[in-house]
Length: 116
Image (tube, rainbow, N blue to C red):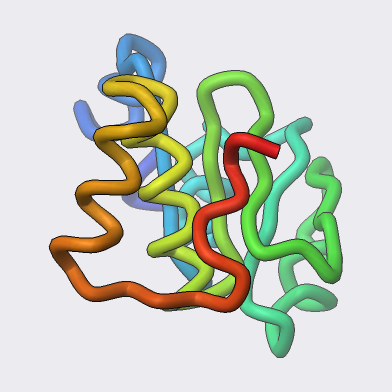
């Protein structure tokens, strides 16, 4: 029994997407489907060894999110917000990302570092 995702249209969609993202252990799905193979990724700290053991992936540790080309992966929920704000800033600009951060009342310390 192989991975269901490697033979579905969902896996092929990633090849055509501008951005492919995952939060927390979603990087396991991206690895199984193919988009994370041979790439640098982040995943939840408690799952880093398990993902690395699957091979053909470089797990970057002690970072909140990783950008590898059009692939964005984050360590967990709040890191996923950081990653999403980075992407909003990349697509719509820093000012818009700051407005989104304020609107969702996300107040990390320090706030929004994508422009540094």
